[in-house]
Image (cartoon, rainbow, N blue to C red; front, side, top):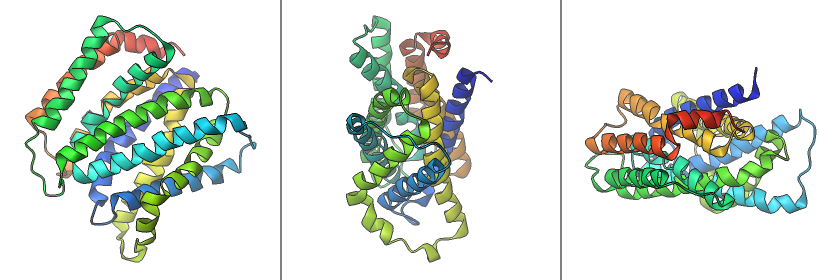
Length: 303
């Protein structure tokens, strides 16, 4: 099968998995695990998976000069990104998480253009503006009152930082995909992420009483660690290796649809007018920033 088609499928599966994660991770916090404890479960579990799998592949060394970029990518992609995502979920709601996360493609778009010194058309500027209006609508006009969302506005701010940090990671890691295999990149990124997240998650991780955690909760933790972290990062990197960063980023727009349906079904969240306004603004933004869906699809034909 064509690598481009496989890459598109990988991006679709990755965004679908993460769409479910907004609710599943939320259900674990804070009664089962604290945000930082779950954070350390993610990076430690994924690191173990990638290093074990690497034993079955040809050993590949990373140039000393590239380790600086690896560490920076680990900071933004597995450090700041995960810390803000989980603490955002703890304070806010699954639907807010999914909607604000769709800022990432905009940030990817802007950062890519900034680094490549490309020009932005007026219509694309308009799309960025509409997207931010949608985010402000969600943050400022949100009238939700949910028991397990203690500080929605703070959580939404975390999501904003989360989207920005993920976009920075997405753009910076692209050059590494041209030089090294996916397993090599991921095993080193997650190894450094263990060190980066040490001050935030180690203590709370060591305080976890695994004996008292129910089987259902263990399944959810396994999903967050193996599916949302190990598989999603691997699939996204494969997609990124074969497609443009902006093309892969487009798939994030599917997350709110999956997350809203699943969160509503689970009774973990409710859809408000602010949510609808934000979703609509992102639909407009995706059409303008990507140069309409036809251009977005055309991007898929370019590497």
